[in-house]
Image (cartoon, rainbow, N blue to C red; front, side, top):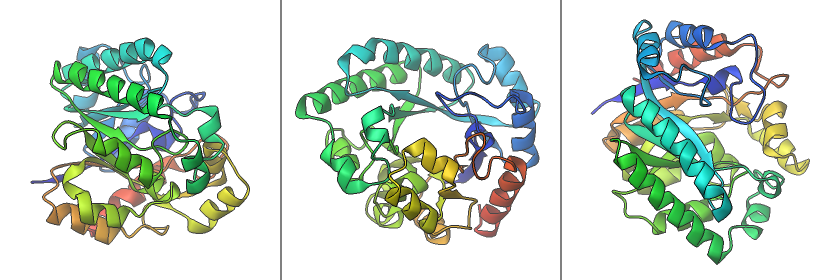
Length: 300
């Protein structure tokens, strides 16, 4: 059993559905991920890294990096969005499978209504999916699991601020619908806490359900300011709610201990969501290096 450390393009401001920073082409980002001491990376938005499997494998290999996963978001509660969403999943699943990844990370797509309540647990729960939407989402997820299984990938679900599976109540409902061997969780410590949960308490009860971990720290004061101001998720990110690893409120020594004691065998992806013009966007390499050094002190 081994915990392996990865980074992700999101630490350089490269995120789905936003304009990509011109200062960080893929070669520079991969160089800096390797320089910071990580052995893996996520794919980032489709098209950021090369989309030819041979070229992608070559670019990773020259830096001794492994592709650990790809993050894909689909508007799961909306049946009219499923055809396009499944096509996106199929495209990314084929690419990452041919580049030797073993896991696809799936999330519900951020919607305007839920984005407006991001980080506010009670408000978010008031506009959870209807029964029909839950059924539509479960159907789409089953199709995605089958599609990924056909190319040798497992699926881990990422609860996400601004999506319809954000709060602890929504996470629990989702995982009541699928057997433990069929759908895993991508536990994002920062998003889980911002959505009103306790990441340590979750790991104490359900560490075996976790197939991927996004290690993200949170500044409680900034998060509470964002909640009081009713910022949407993207505004909260620019406000700087997410902290460099070890600088916020998350008890990472306990998180790592629970993963180790739970025989977790997989990737921990160090993340601090940043966006152009926001807090933390000016020092991604320094933050990546500091995060890797912090993890080494915890034995990872």
